[in-house]
Length: 165
Image 1 (cartoon, rainbow, N blue to C red):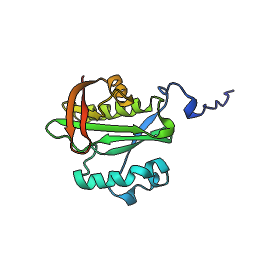
Image 2 (cartoon, rainbow, N blue to C red):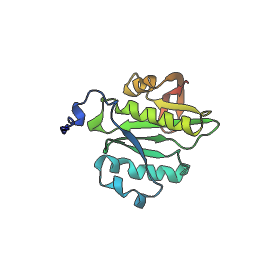
Image 3 (cartoon, rainbow, N blue to C red):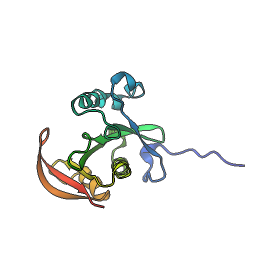
Image 4 (cartoon, helix red, strand yellow):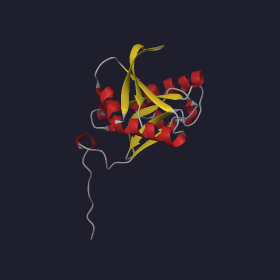
């Protein structure tokens, strides 16, 4: 006879390698995203994502995603537009109550894998603040190498990273 096993609270789990992370697309229009509107962490940047689409276009798979880990919304990630000149930039984040648990690393990895499955010739980049922070660690864990300082139109001087195969 099989016993039921209760999983510990997500916040108490040290390693998340056995869990199932899924990237769920943020659709083009607000009314198409009802599953995200009820969640306070999703609601914060949902409208911003929709406005971003109106500026850069909605071209699947080069869109934004919410990350679900075993059915729980834990963060978001996506692309800062479709590839241009053979390059695409990724961005990701973990909701506050799920930070420092390896989830950002998993979201970054999924975005890299999605890019490679879609077009393995595309260079994958990311940008961070000009400091050694958690995002820099996440990028290194996922095979990114620091390329130098660039000027981002929205954020000013930032570090640029590139995924190395």
